[in-house]
Length: 378
Image 1 (cartoon, rainbow, N blue to C red):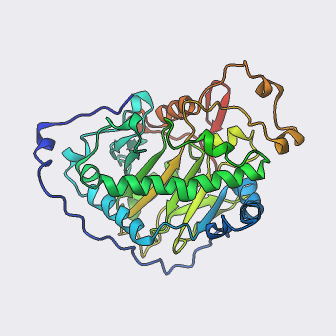
Image 2 (image 1 turned 180 degrees about the horizontal axis):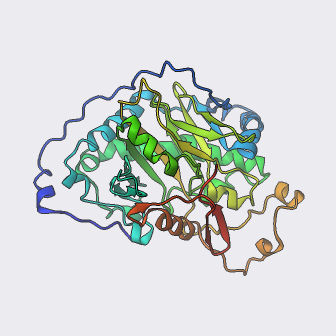
Image 3 (image 1 turned 120 degrees about the vertical axis):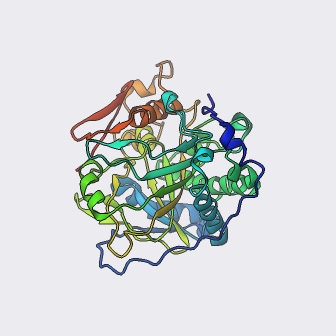
């Protein structure tokens, strides 16, 4: 089901205007002495070398099984293309509100394509969320009728090719490496997340709008808890505003450093379900930025890979997982009804986002047809 398309008469008047895309550059890095997590760097230029995939899989093993966070470098995605996508996102968030609202996310159905407005109140603080985002689906026939905002429509060729290249050059290769770790056929997980199949994969432009220190202090009680992502893999491009933290296996919160020329990656919930907890879904959060960056908006560019309608949420037939005793007998039964990846993700999206007030969720969990995740991590 496509997102609701609310095209107002006011919004329509913008359609014929030329959209100015000003080049965006990364802000200065913070000068504050922050404690950063050490994340492994996976050099994807070695992927096609003889034995390269196997060596990279060995390097990735610890990251995906202990903390779920790592970075990739030498991806074949030029930084000029990355900055161009940041520029599109920056221009979109400067569009009139009527234009941004033209194609909102249909959270009533758990759909995440379109614009998410910063309209929810944060508990009883009297402050609204400062996050806005635009989620763009895969450029495949199944989603050709999903509404496109004018910036997306007028730059669709660039956006669509970038979207596809991220999957081919990064996501697919990471799934191959994880499949090797699991002793599965190399393309097993890539096929389970095939680009041509229906799924809620999306490219995201995101912005954390500026807040005062007082506003950050008031809302921190609602946002300081960690969370995990809904799908299988997340890509995060460097933008230099500090604030993203991960929880280490030792239970400490540490900042994630920008990766010059690279991409920060993390595993997420459905990949954890597919491996019965062997692959760790990364616990992370966003906190108040450093004082020398608090007056700069935090623009984000991300890609989310999610399993589709044909991918059952049960443990994959991995020889490694079988030896570890991680494949339950019921997951070996081909006749057992199982929820699909899309069903789970949309149920989770609806639970988190289909509301007008953001409440504290400490001590709560989300459960859907036997799949369960915590809503909040200290």
